[in-house]
Image 1: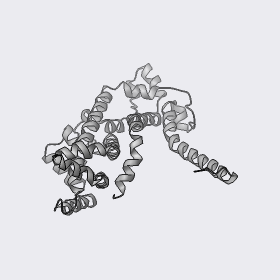
Image 2: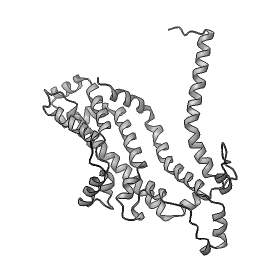
Image 3: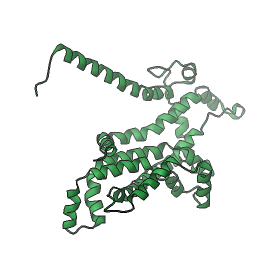
Image 4: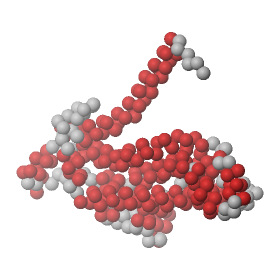
Length: 294
């Protein structure tokens, strides 16, 4: 195919690149602004002087957060919750989606289970019944409770079902001829062929577990059991000036809630920003193939 190099084509391409660059910068600027605000001193943060660069550069907000031993404990709880919860949820979704991707001839109860899942997505019992259920099952201050509190993400289930349906039937037929059973077919053929959609689901689920703080606060009886998001959400700058030493007074005069909150937000974003580049190449493929029935 011969690429057109007319003036109109070049102009449209330039405009397209310019619009995409502006869109990319508009997505990146909030992250950059949050970092700059967290590295600015109290006066600059409170007066709104921070725009593109940190004003009166200081790392006091990060030092204030890092010196808390509970911070590292909460960070470990969040990492543990995200890893275990994502692995468990992905496994359950795969086991649930595989039979639901079959036809009624292959699995007679497919419509019953499918509509039951959709019904649970549209209608739910609410926060109070959910909390009572978690208490009755002893899920307070429990890692199991933090992993099970979100339930089954039906939207992710639909993505996996549609992706499984898009796989060629000849793969399973050949495996059956070779004597493979359903479990062997699932984990040796279907799952390896479904890496794009599984990577997308892992990203969705992991981000959800990492960013969630309400359920972590409700299911924890003390802040020592808070995951990271719940812990940094309740951190504030203390103002008990009468009991402060001269060094603490100097520290307080340089720190504001704005810069501290910006540091919290940026720290919370870093792990997911580190994970996303490794899964990004699967993301678009997984969403597109999982959203359309093959």
